[in-house]
Image 1 (cartoon, rainbow, N blue to C red):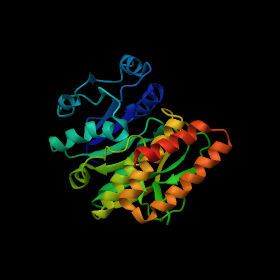
Image 2 (image 1 turned 30 degrees about the vertical axis):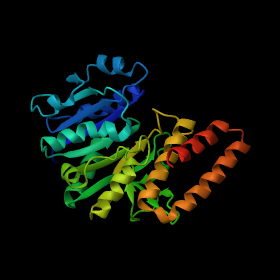
Image 3 (image 1 turned 90 degrees about the vertical axis):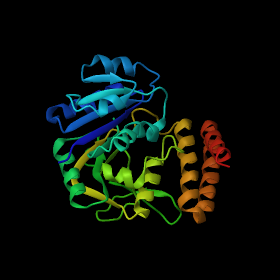
Length: 293
């Protein structure tokens, strides 16, 4: 296996980030570094993370630490604002690019649990096929027999993503919560797009890579478990806003001839939430549409 950089974006989810890092402790060596980027959490995450003793270094400037070859196996980066998923990931990826660091990269959400064997399997699949990104078989953390998806999702005729639950079905993109790739992919495809904030940025990045002849693969024998969104309530108006905003940006960019179907679906969703008395959700959807136009 090549050197591996594990990137975890933390936002108000210190306990899960600590649990996630702790699972790596048993197989950390000099080839594996775990970098937690705290996206200016509004709770006590920074205090909790710093006092664990898990980090060899804590810095507002990850550049000086990433390029060092000493014993900094895992360290904490304190972002000066909430950059969202893409911006947080790019803090580290930009340094890998700038200093021409050759390695494999594993993007991992703090609510994902994965063991050493599965990571090694993802790395093996990635090494076996050039210009590839690799996802895992992701199951529910609470009910471990329930499959969430194989790798990621595919886009329907209408442009709506559907989780892939059939083996050997081609993914249009991999879920950003658990995706492994070689640093060469960053040089080919660039950093993650920052026009999004919370959703769709990995979809944009993956689809862009596929257009450059990149491959979306799944290591079916690599098993990960998803605890289901610990840093944000996926049913909140905040989540609905960013999902909708991102969907409009993505469909406009890659499936513009399907945009009308998205607006019809959003219109129905707005009405349905009004009828259910969820005015905050309907308002967030309307605001997302306005902000994109």
